[in-house]
Image (cartoon, rainbow, N blue to C red; front, side, top):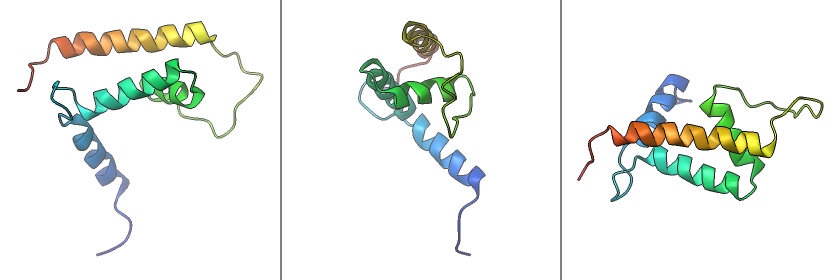
Length: 99
């Protein structure tokens, strides 16, 4: 039957696609997406930083920004993102390389 696919099917397909090796360096597509988002965040893109933090720490994205909220400074947020990347890189070192 036609219609909209189940959300769980879409999530599974995206995860499977993201886990595939996406380049000659043996990086997964997910890893390349993460590095792209990190690069954009470092260049000043608040949306990319928000995505990294939201999905990295399971914080849902908010429809509206609470301007009175206690937000981490840019330096704190950057430290959190860099720490997450260090953890991912350390985990990647333990994985066998795909030729």
